[in-house]
Length: 230
Length: 383
Image (cartoon, rainbow over all chains, first blue to last red):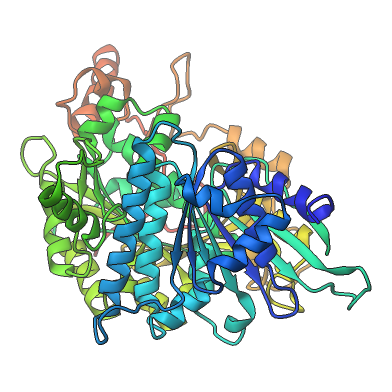
């Protein structure tokens, strides 16, 4: 699928080196595939990835990425992919404060990032969260804790040559005036949004992807809409 | 008119008054632009402080949203020399480690092994690790402000970027308390902050506007009146709003009169540029009745008017026309930093009174009022 518009649009949007990428989707047009493309892109470029998976188990990503020609198990063995299975997050002792759980999680991520920085290959490091909406559920709806955690992940991007990619389900927040989504858009350098076609369903086109670079250093703002074929 | 706001902040407070305060507000529709306008104002005040034109000796930046590095880079690109920067800018870094997690991890690591921690060593950046404690934040800000060099009473300017991030960890009342305490602190020369208005209920942003003497709001250049918000996929709107915005300033003068100013803001490289739009009439448009006469000047008439030398101003005669611009901008001041504003004025008069009989020389203030404007020339007087 990356031969079509979606892939080109992504590489064009990612070309400017955004630090914080927010991928928004909705039920009609899920954008998990964007994460898969970005995951493959990050690993293929010689970098390392920490994948915080709340939505799917490792076997799912492994199967999808294998179809795309990328062997996740191998990368995991080589220490280039750090997989955090958070389906049971926060887990641990019941009754522990959620902020402590986030603190421990952040500590683990920072350790991995530090180790990567010291290692010889030391490419770009990507922290990927699939997805933030579930993180909020895990935090029992405490947005402040999620935002604190995300803020620390963002500080990694400015201090340690990292990038952060997060997926969020936009339609969950459509009725809220102020929510996690708005905060995320503020911290984003690049917003990638998957939406159904405005003209309705078509046989071979599933939806459209748009990207909005918000990068402060960008002088020339470019914006394109790509049509996504699945 | 961003100039006007900057000038008010630069001139600082009078004895017995609260410091002037500017609130810069913006929404997501023009998000990068409000933040850039804030950077622009910050850099302008830093360079005023560096050149000694402002009342404040230095600038304390309280950075929540952006890493101190962003400020350092921006100021460097604006041409501020790193030494001056170190002398008159202090950054309280609430971005890197706002709730102390990194320090905690570091101390844990030290117990296990001695891994070299990654830290930022910059003399003018202080990392603040407990943003939830508003009282401590206030003390740290004031401590940093007191650290500037100088004799007599040292004034300083405070920039907070942004209030919205503070509101995540503290209540509206405690932050309003912090702001008004900072405003009334006797060493604060001026204070300004950024607020993302759409992240809070409207009453919150209004509460902070009440604390300020100036409000600058950055609004999207184009708004679709039918949908009232961006339509996904409608790129032309977005594209325009990312490079242009409207900049409204509302400022309250000492005598209580309120002024509305309007400018257009354009992205230009890494900085923003303010263009006083010929549509400044837009603000007045609703107020003025529709009449047959021409109330506005054309571009040519405007430039002709600007070229007229008024009889009470000195007529040039080969000398450059000086405009009084802040406390110490006259060339003599640059050679002698100890001069005060009144001393400068004396010095300007002296050589002339030596050559001829008594003359009164009028030096126009750089303030934006035209000499022949309708405004009451005495309205600054406190009677």
